[in-house]
Image 1 (spheres, rainbow, N blue to C red):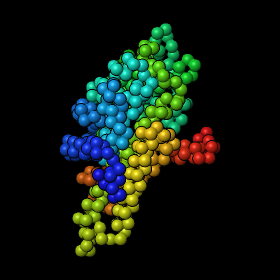
Image 2: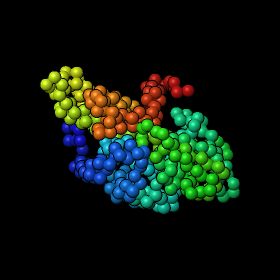
Image 3: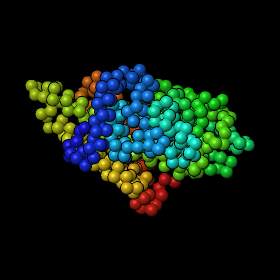
Length: 385
């Protein structure tokens, strides 16, 4: 791992071993193919059981329900290594673990936990998270999807947009307003009558990830499909906090990848008889990248300690997501400059990460939204509405 300040000395030996194992597997099995997957717009579903076997899915959730049960630091390091390969791979794991398995573990019934979590941890069951709508991204409370009670069932109607894993999911966690206007979560089999997932094509970002529109037309689910303890907007927002934590770590993996490409290229590419690494302006770019990575790694490490201690709040996560993703996007753009024309080819990771990070910068809360979340906390004034 890129670690200019030896931050890994603060990690337990078990955490370091988990990261090494993750890196070895990903470099050996996925790295050689990821550019081709991205170019063809393919998410390789065959790797899902392997990700489960490696303990990457719901890694920090309880062993009581068949999950790995690793600490939050180790979980963050797994997200780091996945996104070092590609943001689409980390997104798959984030949705599966933080956005579907986590809410089941926190808000679900014992039956739901025991039935679903072991299968999801093994990669035998894939989930997606249906919150965002066409007119409700940064304002999820404005959702129009409804869940109307009909005896011992609910009838769901609505449309969800930009849903990762939608076309490969076996189960969708759909957030909808009940008869009283309260937001509730429903576990909907994607095979249900009236449920359709439409794959979003022609993307120039997150191409090694499945992104979908979900359409629900009179989809009937039993009342037992509802997460019993999830009431109100705070429930899905708590899931986003978990996912944003993983993103804060993952973005640093992407930063390492583009920095490594830029450093190696600058040492091998010569102009006027000297490697461009000897040029002051190139060194300035490289120093900015490694400095931003170092700051981000310290920020993510502290966030992990706060999460373990139970003192991490959503506004703390907003700081890390806001800063680490923007730093990584900036580094990718800078690395593209260092590589020149070579930087736009898939022979290097730079353009792929740069385009992916354009999405990561805006999903799970745009930089502006996170700015206003933090601003509200420090001023006690709400500029969001």
